[in-house]
Image (cartoon, rainbow, N blue to C red; front, side, top):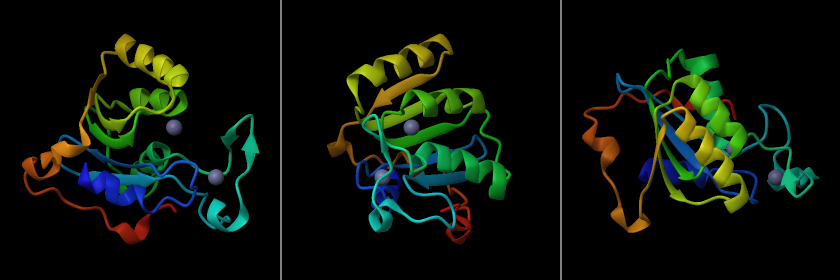
Amino acid sequence: MQVARAFAQRSTCDRAHVGCVIVSPDFQMVYGYNGALPGQPHCDDAGHLMVDGYCQRALHAEQNAIIKAARTSGVSLEEATIYTTHYPCPVCTKMLIASGIRRVFYHYAYRPDLDAISDAMMRASNVYSIIMPLEAQSELLLDLGGPRWIDPSTSPT
Ligand SMILES: [Zn+2]
Ligand SMILES: [Zn+2]
């Protein structure tokens, strides 16, 4: 979770500083944070692209991590675990479930109305979500035993 929080600080949309790390069963990792498409202006520079109270410019952290797995890392997310600062929105939840992710560790609720939808989707697909108190300072990632980092310089953002 400390790694997820570290990447959250790289978010370039200040509406939500979200970061995440997805760990596959063979300890490969992909990370993501909330930010603009590659080569396009970030919210911090160009302002938000607001529609109905949501910023449409930024890709969510979870989406960036899944994209990274598909595009540059070739990591299967079957049976993987995600550590994310915020509870996934419904769109990200659908992508996480469809990617094969089985467990979701998170620190913060996102929005009660949306969280209820995400929660129902996860339950229907037997995906476990576990809240982790901030003060826990979990070393879970380290417990996984010598994780192999994906080269951060190949980040999609
Ligand atoms: Zn934004
Ligand atoms: Zn999302």
